Amino acid sequence: MSKSVIPVQIRSVLPFNSGRAVFLGNEQKVFVIYVDESVGAAISMFMSGTPKERPLTHDLIGHLMAGLGAKVDRVIINDLKSDTYFARLIISAENELFEKKILELDARPSDSLALALQQRAPIYVSREVWDEVEDRSDVLRNLEEGGGGIQPGEI
Image (cartoon, rainbow, N blue to C red; front, side, top):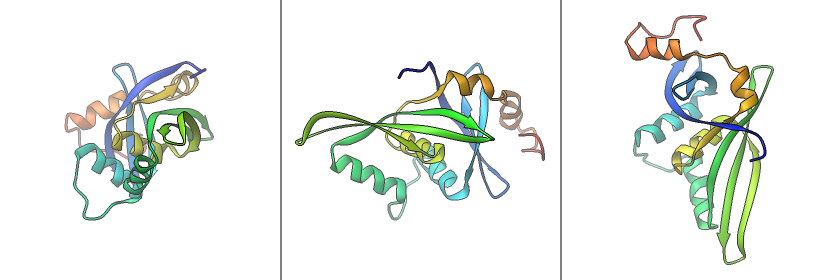
């Protein structure tokens, strides 16, 4: 990792409009990434360990990676442009074809977060993004204390 990064965790996933609001952060700050409903549901299922009748797309990707001797090493949310987040999925592979290989892939943050949860990989945010995002700790705290849910314009 050549850039400075901040470790974060997914703090909560809540329904919002036609998708989900994913609250990410640590003890210092929390920010929100909006994701589509299907990936938001997958993130929630990985968080809660909900069993699935059939493998979902992220399960399939995880199974393919495991079969190839690969795993998610870490996820870095590395850029924010016009309210759109960007992420890098860092994958390490070690199998009979090569000793060890590191792949860095451009990926949607939502998919990256789902795969990180599935494989228990750490999640980071670049210092540049961290410094740019607005702290939403108060919104999350209000929701956790039963403050009546998300109000329009609140996040």
